[in-house]
Image (cartoon, rainbow over the protein chains, first blue to last red):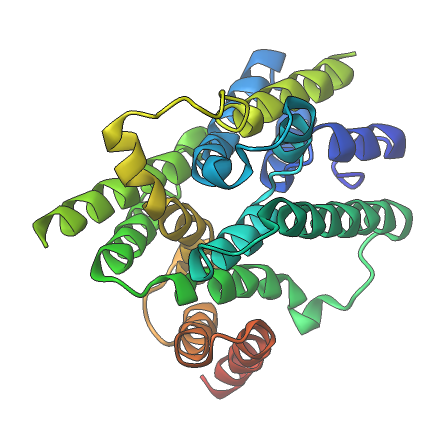
Length: 195
Length: 104
C-alpha cells in the first residue's frame, strides 16, 4: 500500500477501519490511478459482498450473543476467521462454546493481520520473493476448504464456483468473485435436491 | 481528503456487509431457499477465492501441469483430502510448487 502511494498513517487506518485485504489492494490501485470516490466504494462493495454470505452462514452459531458482541463478531468476520470457525462448526455441529472459539480464532487472525500490515509498512518487502511464500495464502484456504467437501452437493458447489471464478477473473470490480459464489450456491442446491 | 473519505466509506460498507445477518434478531427465520443455500457458502465462496490463484500463471490462464501453481495446488488438494492436516497441506503445496517449477 505504501508502495502504491498511501502514507503510513493512512495505510494503517485503512487496515484497521476496513480490515479487508483484497479491497484494500484494489483501493490502493484505484487511488493511485486517480479514480473517483464512488468507483472506489462500489468496487469495495462488490469485492466484499461475500462477507454478507459469511454473515448469514455463521449467524446460527452466534445468534445467542448480545447485540454488542454480535457487532464485534461482524467487524472481525474476515475470510480466515470465517473459514477456521465454519470448518470447526461443520465437523462438530454440537460443540459447546462456539462463540468462544469464534472470537479466539477471529482475534488471533485480526492481531496477526494488523501486525503483518504494520511490519509491511515499516520494513517494506522483507522475505525473499524467490521463496514464493505468497502462495501459502491460497494453500491455507485449500487446507480449510477441501475437508468440507464430503458430499456430492458440496463438491458440485466447489467445482462450479471454481470454474466460474476462473472464467470471470477478468471482469471489472471483481464481479467474478460474486458471480462465482452464486454459481456455487446454485450448483449445490441443484445437486442436493436431486438426491 | 478523498483518501480519508475512502477509508471511512469502505469501512462502513464492509462492516454493514459483515454484520448484516449476524445482527438480525435471533428468533427471525430466514426464507427456506436461503436456509438451504447457506451450507454451501464455505465450499462455494472459499473455493472462488483460491481457484483463480492456481489457474493463472503470471496473469495468463494455464490449465496444464506446466503451470507450477496449478500442479502445486493440486498436490495440496490431494494432501488436504487424504490427511486433513493444515500444515502438511501448505508445506506440500509450497514444495511441489518449487519442484514443478524446477522440473518443467
